Image (cartoon, rainbow, N blue to C red):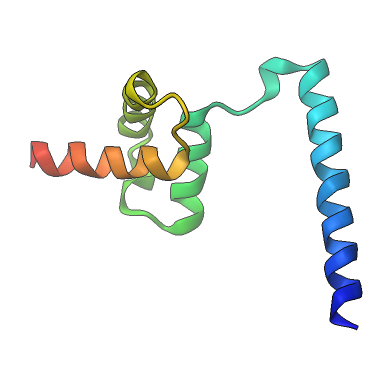
Length: 87
């Protein structure tokens, strides 16, 4: 029975992703940027840098220059490194 739940969950995720892709195709400005994703991840995780969105925005801008495929976790790690280096 658990496999039915997995299949239903996978289908739900596929539908949500399709809806989001359609929405972003019509409204590309609505897609969150890397900095927005990093800030949201920090807030959801209770990360100590969650209350420093400017630092996370700078880190996101910096990291994509050398790592264009960076994700929100990469931004948080880079921001931590920058904060530690300046402490």
